[in-house]
Length: 139
Ligand code: CA2
Image (cartoon, rainbow, N blue to C red):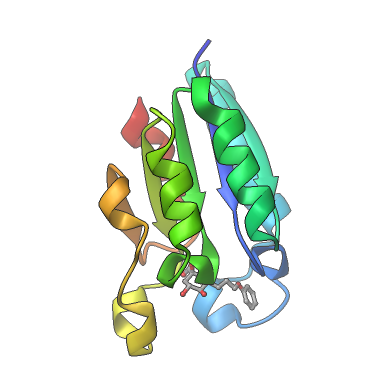
């Protein structure tokens, strides 16, 4: 059975609790539950992780080296973490980068991703539906 890691970075555990205008009303738990249902429907396994710590995310990227794909919202690390970029480059697994908000409509520091050059693609601005679109992109 194909296995996909779903990694969420810093502050995404706050989803549904603040800034609903930017990130929507759903909690991360609800988003993960919906994605688990889609994975189940499609006959694949999804492994969910969230951390506010860069090293945890790097360890999980390494752990996923034999998985079929990684869906990752690196949060603000997107814009400056060369360590996460190097971790992705160090594994042979395809990564799809997800951003809930349309980062290009926001502050200029959010316009650049140091992660994108080592990903298959980026899904930006479709709200939490972006995670499902990312899973479907692998299937
Ligand atoms: O749009 C996205 O998904 C982001 O990756 C979210 C990050 C942000 O730093 C990126 O520029 C774009 C921030 C996640 C913070 O999530 C919150 C959720 C609820 C309330 C406050 C923050």
